[in-house]
Length: 558
Image 1 (cartoon, rainbow, N blue to C red):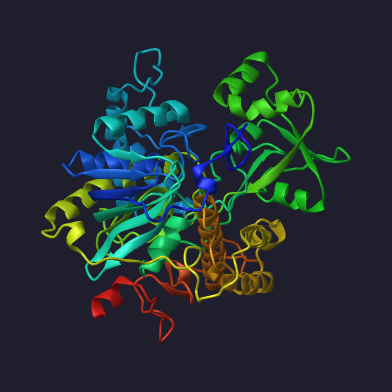
Image 2: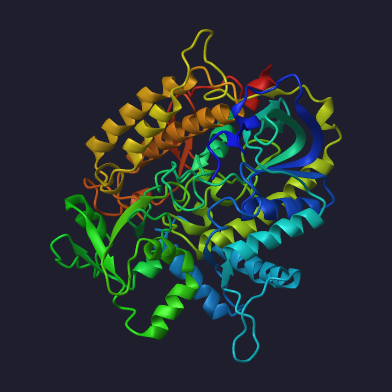
């Protein structure tokens, strides 16, 4: 492995000061930020409508993100009315009745048709004994490799290793983005008539496989323009994994018996918090003893081979020997919150700005509870396609071209000093401080009002630290922006959680253990410096909401 910042012994361009005098600049109709499944579907959707499309990704389209390295269940239900109605009713109940049946039916209809298209493109779905395709599961590596090829064939221009850092805006709305090319050590500016944010959620660099590119910059970029968020209080998902491993796999570990250091069995029957409670007391171990036949073990290994790799390398026989387990925080990736969707086309409150995948709030479909797998994969596929198609229609309907607009960059924290002479952003220290507020089970899993209030005060105190001077290389600039986005995402999540004084779906409060029927409504979160929370559809609680200096509304007023 190469030393960080070096390639073949030489310093890589991403670690050198950015050559600002030679930027990459061009125009496009639709700019897609993010190269996971939602971004790929958005790019394909826009290109299939005749738009010129550019996709930029922090990593590599086809291998970065949470989907690519693993297996993914997909919400696939045959068009049988009874089956569909049961699926919708089940989801509505699991989500605390904050989702909308119409949206869930839209997802079911869309996924059914689009997976047939995926098969036509060449994905090898397994067949049953009658020759019928089994389309309820996608293997990430094959799926995303296929999507990269589909996007390229559609004529989409792809910039890998080119993270977006800030949006461009004028009085008409969003107008493109700026970022850096880590391959060339150059800044880029891409002007576009429409932008789709598909940068994923925020996993706070918790170390989950494929998730360390998911640090919340898309949410921060949108909020800097004045976009609203929704469902941020439902960011309380922790997934079990082998201790020291990066693969979270609750279903595989469901074949195990968990026990404490002294061998006492952790009884998890009917108690979803049993593992978390046991981990507060000390180490917990698992052995996959419920896979008690060679056939069961073969199936488990075949379904999730990557889960077993670190255990095999460490010399464990996970079916007969205990191995340590932990809970890994997954933030908004398997939470619910994200940019609030305001239309069937995945538009937002900002003209020309669309959101898809985990960057968008999934409340319309998942309500108050998400988790991994089926619904998230279906949401990525559907919201990506819908947003891309709508972005293309919007862009092609505009008479003005991107190069004719007077655009300004909207980024602040992590990309621009708040004042001349500001101290450098200590990114490593900031990131560690954020993680100490969102990872601990005693803060963010077993939530209580006074503990969360104290945590939020510490997070608010961190905010000035990410408004200092960013670094001068692409790597440093990206890291400072990631740090700012993580601080802000945690502030949004804690603030929204404190506003929901009940227990519903993923969100729990020790002081409010019951669901309150009066709070059966979605919460909207907005603001960067000052954060405001209000029930969706109602006026902001603050009589004088803070206008962000670069919001598109201010640009309109100017």
